[in-house]
Image 1 (cartoon, helix red, strand yellow):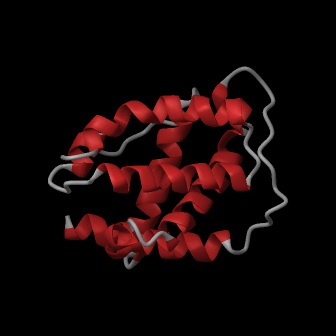
Image 2 (cartoon, rainbow, N blue to C red):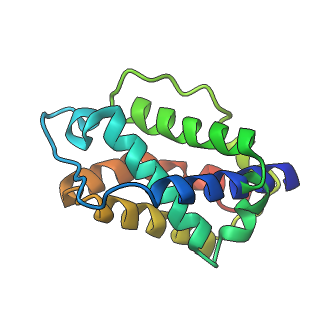
Image 3 (cartoon, one colour):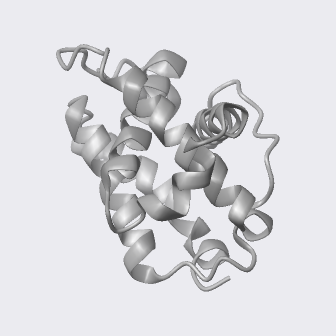
Length: 154
C-alpha cells in the first residue's frame, strides 16, 4: 500500500507539472459514434488523464494516498499509462490494458466512498476543463462506474 501510494504521489506531481504546460483552449470534440473517437482518441484521453492526475494531486481529500506514487517517476509513468490504456480500451479504442485488476490494485487500501467520490469529481473536473460534452462524460462514467465495488472498501 505504501508503494502504491508513493507511486501515485510521484505520478501526480509529474502530471501536475506537465498539465501546467498545456493550453486550456484545447478542447475534446466528438467525431463519431464510438466513445473512444467521440472523446477525441488517444491524444485527448491523454490530455484528460494528465489534467485528472493534476487535479488529484491538488485534492486534499485524496492526494496523500498518491504521494508515494508522485515521488517515484517510474510509478508515476506507469499509473499514467495504465489509466490511458484503461480508458482507451474501455471506450472501444485500440489500446490493451495490462495493469492489475481494480480488485488487485486496491486490495487492503480500505478506500472510502468519500475518497472514491473525490476521485470521480477530479475526473469530471478534467473532462469539464477540456469541454467534453455531457453525453460523452456520462458514457465514460458508465464505463468506469462498475469498477467502484472493486475499489471501495477493499
